[in-house]
Amino acid sequence: MRRRGSGAALSVLVAAGLVVVPGAAAVPGDAAAAGSEDGVLRPDAPTKSIAFYVGKNLTEDGATLLGGFGHEPSSHWLEIVPSRDFPDDATTTVGVTDRAGYPGELTEIPQARRTAKYISSNYSEFEGFPAPLTNGGLNEHGVAARDVWSPTSDRLLDKTDAVQTGPNYSDLSRIAMERATSAREAVEIVGGLIDEHGYSTYGGNSHLFADENEGWVLVNYGGSQGLWAAERLGPDEARVSFPGYLDPLPLDYRDRPGEYLASDHFVDYAVEQGWFDPAGRDTFDPQAVYGGWQPNEREVSPTHPWGANVQGELEGELADELAPVSLEDMLAYVRDPRWSHDRAGYGQVAQLSDVDNENLNALWTAVTGAVTTPYVPVYIGAEDVPPEFKQHRYLTNDTASTHVAADYAPLEATEYATRTFKRLMYHTCEHPEAFYRPVTAEIEEFERGLVSEQDGVVAKAARHYDAGREDKAAQYLTRYVGDRLGASLELGDRLVGGVENETRERFGIRMPAGRDLPGETARPESQSMNRGGGLDGDADGIAHCYREGLGDFPREHGSYAERTGELELPVSWLSKEAFLRAMEQAAPGNGNGWREQAERAWARLQNAGE
Image (cartoon, rainbow, N blue to C red; front, side, top):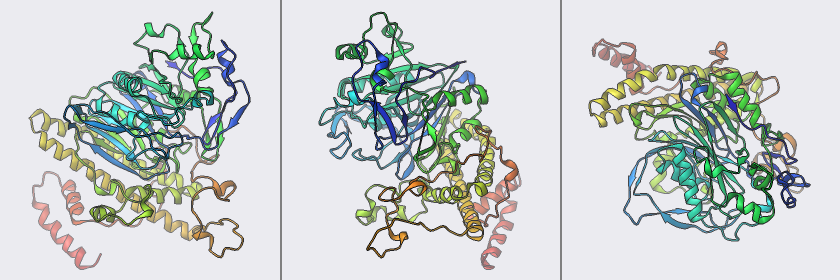
């Protein structure tokens, strides 16, 4: 087993909301000096996302695992994007607007003739970055992607063009999903786009791509100099991007394209700037020279209450404590309350192996923060998801400025799964000692049922594909995904009801203390609900379930099973369709003999008003 990220520490601290970066140029030839000067705090720096890679030789079933999520204050929704064919002259819009922290302008670049089908958790809010935004997902070729922040040093960011052009992080993630057939090809595509069209930064970024055989981590640096580099992650490695980082590259990296890829001038630029002298050296450390920080210098902040920049510690948990890592282990790890909280936009786990049919690739997805949201496997072969899991106006950028368009009113009228599970998160994290374990127990019992039925789901769909019944297979997988997403939402409704009822009885619903606004008569409940603006301490923090002593982490999936049934959950509302489906499943092999009795039972329930 090979584990990365134990390089020497520099004086820079990278964490949620607090990033220390170098304030002066390095002494020529001394890469470490890039971070040796006094730093400046950047409390407004983007600190987004986390990714976990486990190579196939460290997993229970020999599949590569890639998990993680994005940190965004935004609505999130699930989308299965179909493959599309375009004419030769088709273009796609990329870049950022003048509202971005580093302003730019939108441009058009050529679109591919054919784009692949992929699954994505989309979102709407990052200032100056046009929606829908994505951090990656899983495509039909079995390529999975995560996108994670990776700060660029001030001295390089100072060189950013006044008006940026070129694709942004989301554009690159989307295009990789649309075009890549392997993790390495994803790197080549992203690097090629930066080489040809430039890159619009928000301050520094990274990508982690994986397929059934390997992973690649790529860092794209801000500063408008076209700098990027990537290193391969093998089957015996665990890698955590929190934020994303690169190990030192050998100076002969161009002779080792199976291990490293980079822009042509990646080292030469540093030499030209006087930031690096290759004389007497065998390696080039991009973290020191271009990043201005090193991994494994933990920092705690209000937006990362357990801490961030702890890559080596987490890589050890995955490779040493949890290995061989199972799918369920990764589900629990992405859900871990040390990092899954109100800033976690969703949860994703891709299990990447050599499937018989590309449509049987699946992305286990939690529609919002997995700390209190069940995962459901979403198959590439499915065609759509229920409306409750699509875009709604809750937390969506700019929705308060106008009424909903009539075209979208029926969609908006449906329950929004993200909102339901956010409610569950807020109630659970208000009193985690009372609710975290029993809520997790109910969610993971549901997931264990899903895991146990996957062999049967794959076998049934495969029979359709093998017989040439593509439409039947698509219908089956679409219905399956929709049913299980619906069942997860029903569980969420029951959990919200149970936890809220118990909260009212045991604790009451806490009202905000708000801000002291002299001369104003409005109650705190009518003040801004946003962070900042006079709030202090815990009141200005984020909702999170992690507490010291809450549990032993990392933990195994299902480790709280004994707490199942502890919550008093209300009986869920049941549709006739769901009732009849449950009856059919309870009476297999009985033909339609059960149906007449089931119809009578349903009628009695309706007549009784139950």
